[in-house]
Image (cartoon, rainbow, N blue to C red; front, side):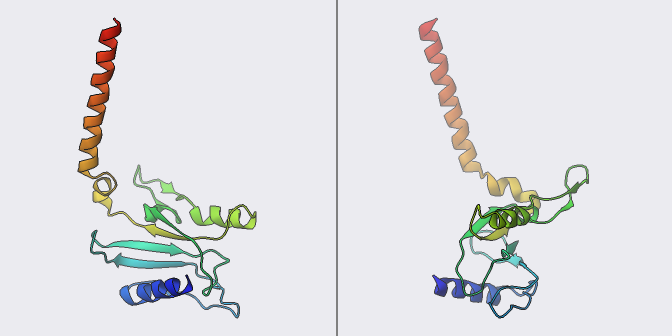
Length: 155
């Protein structure tokens, strides 16, 4: 497992040129300050490039393996920003603060969170492609027809 983490760390380091720098680690290999790593326009052969942000828990140690949680709408999961509805300030989902609290309370083990940003105007098509939508509409019609036939038999 440690080899996989090291390979992933090297991959992220080599494949992304625009990123925030990780801060200095202490003698126990714990990150001292900055716990967010941002990769702008992260490339993929499957989807258009997008930003991703990685959050490391306070307990993160560079030689220790931790589970990883991948979350969509990454631009909203950690930080507040001006909201898209009415331009009001949105505090974000505060996933980092919530997880820190759960770790301290001993309710969950430390995990790394990877926030995958959406692409704005294409968000709906990214999360709900047309083919499943058409399939769901057909299933709803079948269910409606089944209910109507059952109702006619009874009445």
